[in-house]
Image (cartoon, rainbow, N blue to C red; front, side, top):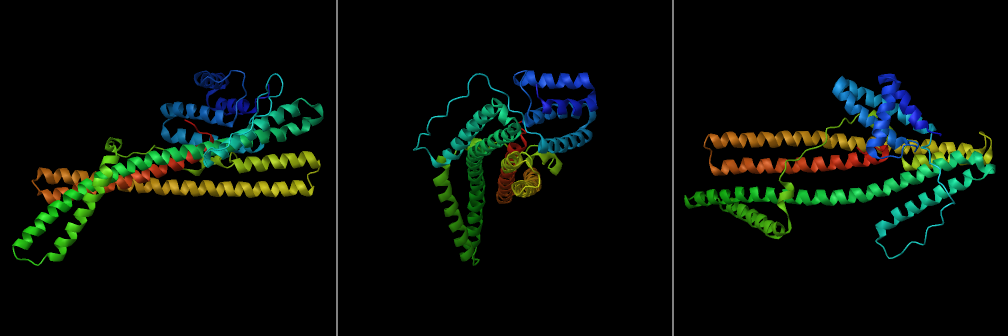
Length: 379
């Protein structure tokens, strides 16, 4: 059985833990996830096993050494994936019939995923047809890249659907946080209006200040009247948090060779090589150029997404620190007997920092989900 990714994984793990232990880890991962025992492993399967081993190494070696190992293994896997398509297991029996016509009238954003799934099915049938014809044997490798490219395209659109649902959930939580913040702001404004009204009764000229605070109080009250009945505030009860993850570029090296556009360009190169039979043919040279361009664009996308994730991670830590400082300051003032207005201002500052931290945490999570879809890291 042709199983190049399993062999690669076995050799990588054997260097660290020995051949017997490496095989046991792989078999354990296969059993735990319910994968068919005889199915060849693909790049995404290898990523899952690497995550299992990383967890073991963190316990045995410590975080720093385990991190270095995972980064090196991921970079090596990315290099291997550039030259080796994930094997498409052979199917038994006759080639599946063509899929039925797409039912129209669906939502427009459903159609790209339907189309991608249809392309995957067609590519798989085409591969089986090539395998069944000895005259097309040399085309099999190109067809395997085609299958992998269509599968990556399906993941791309499935990720878009997942991110859409995730963003909607994040929006609900963020609006609930805004309601919490507005309640704190209303309390600050209410107490401020009372204080300024006292100054006005004492003869001080505070008319503009009083009018401005009353206006802000009425606007805040209007916001709460509109949104409070619509929002389940319990979704924002927990403090914001983010996954603990290293954002080193090497950890996401697979995002380039596994990018749908790169896989498609690699398929086109293999097809051109089969068609031309000459590496110097203009069609082959053009396909090579297209592959390099696709790799550069995928690398730029990865770096942009990683850059955004790092910025969100840094901003989250800053806002979380500000939130905790504000909560601590509020508690200290409460113990010292501070007045209600001072306490409410600290509470409002804490809620604002909490909301800002939540937004950064959500944007970081979304960026990581996008990177995970490309690298195949599903754990």
